[in-house]
Length: 525
Image (cartoon, rainbow, N blue to C red; front, side):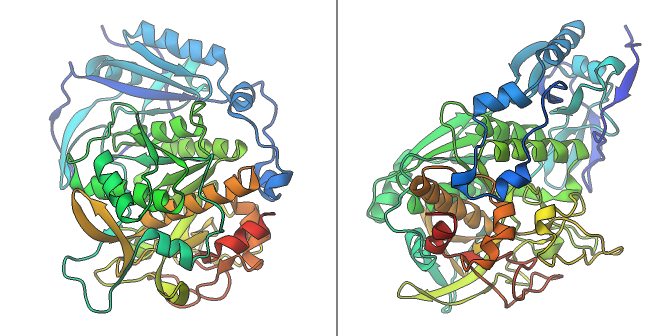
């Protein structure tokens, strides 16, 4: 029977095929898939606290919401969730999970049933990277649900993000340097007497896995016990070492760097499929996790803003805003492909989710040191073949109020629009001054801004431990007070393509790399 109910498009849900993709046939109508439906915050809730005002205060002056308080104040209205469940039953769909805190309902059904329910035609596409189930145009919902539904993710399962690491070539050059993560922590003067005790650090992964025995071997070589690591499955993602050696490199880099610099923290790794739905669901699982309650989230995956739908950009940004409200810092790699960010249109692009104003965007440097002292640090740019730190001006997010006094330049693109500038901070990322890690039984040297996000996450876990309160949303404080407090090492030499480093904030390394002890002092420690 044809579906004749009046439908309205979900704003920002329109999709186009991936570049170079072609339709090879219809999607299997009997395949069972899941989608996540995101709904609005409860309409009757009081206005959320001013996050920018909260972020501009020292940690001891802040009162972030608990996860339970957030759900009560900013979660979904139960009546809205009930309407989505009724819609599902009317279309023969199963309700898999309902979360008021995450404002989400997970629905399951056949491709045929979900296509009818959401007014889409799903097809199979071939593209240079493989195959995916995709759609074009908008997702549609009944007109009565249009004010409620903010996003529908999962109908299209194209790969959404890439890991942001660079592996040093098998034949290193004489001038190459590599560090163990504790050596990098020493160069950056991480605060003495801290080790992350009592803190949980969330790590989001979109593939790959770790082997516990291999982690034990690596940390034994460092002369320390392996940290406590827990794997969480999201949307059918699992800890699967060996299935994707490339993704294994990301997972092991993240755990080994963060674990080596904050060895007594607990690391909770959320494994999800590499789709916009999987990525978002892993983030919201971490943000709203009432069991492990992470105070820091490390994300080393991303893609150019232009590759995302507006509904996904909004959903991720809202998830990070929720994290800020609850005192959770989200550290995101800013990308490894310079100011172009893998896009070949000749324009500058920034990486998302690092470009969210609620993320701490982490750029990259080339770090050289001797005897525990930095001798030189410049922008990471190994052009033309070795990658470069991401950074620039967002085409999606407006210039935040807390960046207004930091001389954020306009975009270099035609029109020279103003926007959120990134990165905010930086750290060692050049593979020729990279990190010695162990992955799939092999010792290797890795760089990339993928290493900087877990490095900062580990540092912030140590600072949270010392302060006894989470640093939380760091950006307003960073721009209004910390940038001028000598807590970061200003990087003034180098470029990432379109943008040049210089005194103060720049679109290559932000305010620079950390002096961990001075940062702790500036935060009230």
